[in-house]
Image (tube, rainbow, N blue to C red):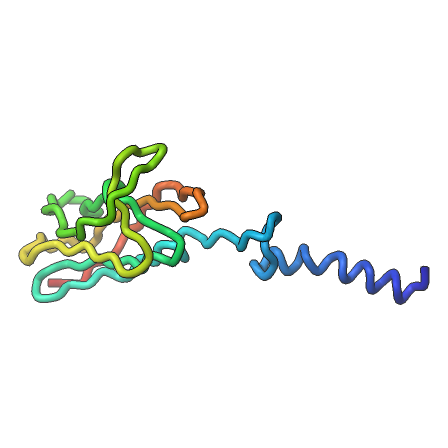
Length: 149
């Protein structure tokens, strides 16, 4: 084999390895790469509007969050108690692992705490969701800084 042909074959053979790492090539079976948890469930910075605290996710296409797996607690050392947030009802769904649950599909999901929420400065938000492909993400927790009242 000529040296130029050998070099070209080696470069073409390495291309799928380099591009696959960047998500440009589909996985085996032609399926696209699974988005990261932060791509599937994009948690926005917390907002404080007219005394209410608003937490928002952008749920990606082909993904869903479990309503029953959403948790909110103060991350301040004093452990300020928080009231339950207002959440949309969600879509009824039967899950093979969790049974009958409610889920939130692609689009905006907003959790809103009523006016008068204690002046906590940090909020721990926990959540879990899955992709429609059947892959579930591990439970997640994030600490959000809350704007001053």
